[in-house]
Image (cartoon, rainbow, N blue to C red):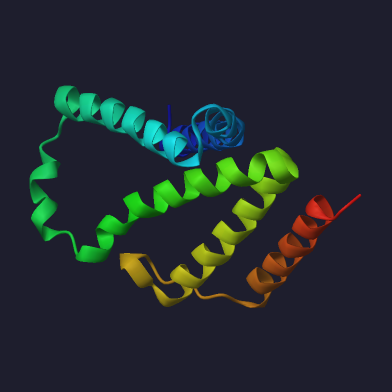
Length: 147
């Protein structure tokens, strides 16, 4: 499989997983509470990623000392994401939750990429990207507006 096709498949699967993760987390949150769901989701993730690290390790984790302090914030953000999606899904529906999440994610990614923050390649926001983000925002409003 060529590299681009593999990347498309991997990202496509991740998108499918993200679309189903919200309802799963909301179901879990309804049974064990918001904090319980966040803990359970990350515990399962810890066990799965820990097992993969043990059995398929490339030995790169040894470089953990070289990670800047802000590189560790992804874990805290992950907990916040799980809790936010678990909270929003039963209130505004999965489509509204996902569209708001994706639009915010794209806007943040555009800003980070524009400035090259967090060691990302610089990709300036041009008029086309700005228009695309505005159109996404309008589309998100159309999805979440009251009926």
